[in-house]
Length: 344
Image 1 (cartoon, one colour):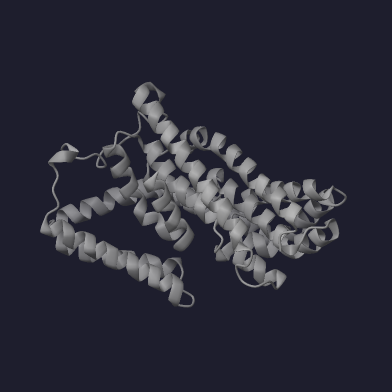
Image 2 (image 1 turned 60 degrees about the horizontal axis):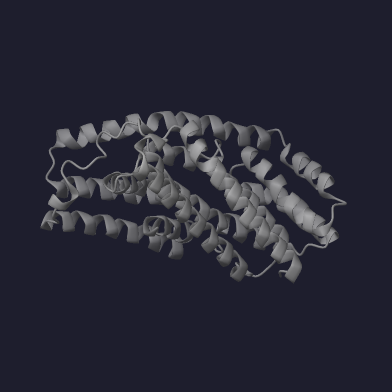
């Protein structure tokens, strides 16, 4: 439960792709606690995806939506905070439920046969102790993470390339402070590259979808078709329908900010005609974009993080799809509440 909420807070406060480097930590900890790599992905990837998708301060979705609608930035945070906290609690319960199944019968493991070499502890947990060098390495890593947090909140234009640069510098300093030989560091680097190589190809292929749509200038056409399909629906049903439509578009436009720019200029005026405030239209967009990120194969960050956990996408779908249904029901209840109270 704590690990799920820790990674969830990283998703809320730091972002999504910015946290890729922290995924192996969850894998090592969860394996030491008797879980498998699918549970490690549930704790880390699942926690971050749910929290980032429903975050009340997600600039890519909520922030851009508020700029488009000319609303105060991150206004209406009370309902989004409830949805985010409830979604994380559901994610934590789902992880604990799967963990208990593993403890009851290891045959229930979805990732029981996955390669865990290099991730398992070399001796029993109780035999470990924290040395002075361990404290030094942890301090270096936390300083790097602190630099990333400072950049995200205080430096204009601080994005993924800046985060990558900081983590590369941290890696060099850690290698020098660890006492490892140059050969050991080099071999570890090559092993890491080998694990990430398949993900980079998949990310490149997935990116072509949004590139083709943008260059072909068909995003507005799709948005217009969705608007026509929603027009005439009852108010409550139109809010749910808007989130479902955005879920489908998310598979074609995985970028939250890109999807906001492509769809909200059409959806917000349509929502006004249907009796939905701009705040509700933005919330419906956030729900559709955020929750379906759990199984979006065109989302580069998701593919990369699953690759670091060594979890094949089909195994992840077996784990994540039932949870996605539960989260959508939870979020739709929030949307219905928003319509009922005239969420502004």
